[in-house]
Length: 293
Image 1 (cartoon, rainbow, N blue to C red):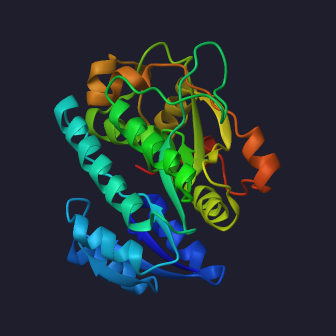
Image 2 (image 1 turned 180 degrees about the vertical axis):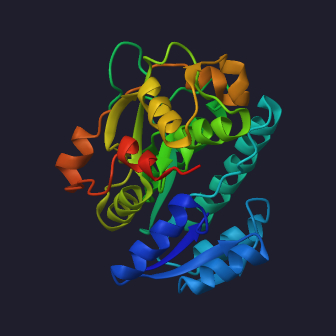
């Protein structure tokens, strides 16, 4: 297949571009900067320049390919307003991509987040929360999945809030960054809350499987670690950086601090059983051993 990839120079996207090419697919990637363009070309991808606001470019890329993998998303988490703006931007982009593929039998996979279900690990059949800070993203992905009724092979891969590689990425990466800035390996809440996690390479493999095999409207969970207590992550970070470990207020972690304080384990049992996906890379605690002063 020729796959149009948005967000191909990011943490997951770069792993996906490499994975697709290793498995015989070609890649047309969206690049929003010269740096991204050079990174993607070095990885062997063809490149089209634009971003999530250039809807005509998105439609052009989708129309020119056999499949679409949408991963691009703004990393501006400074405030709830900036997060909301990013959600609106992605909603428009997903609609444009879906419209470009409508009426055909081409697959498109979008990334969303594992839901939070009080008292248990979330599963693939649990609905996404459509309220709160990230509600619009859930609504946009649900709208894309609904296009499966019109013949579009749309599916969604839900990512845990920690997608990591080399001790960086996601909520775990936020802990590392905060520790470097403050001189304290802190964690929000009481530290007993569990975060699911996945290595970026394993997440990329699942995205490829979704493009190759997923039925229309399917939902998958890219979860390797079902739930690791946040305090354990902070303890590894503190030991690696030689810093004290203690609880810190949730607001010190920015706009997503309230979410970070929640217990949010997630299961991928159905995904593994159905697609044959099996994570092979280090878990989050082992990966955090790569953090250096």
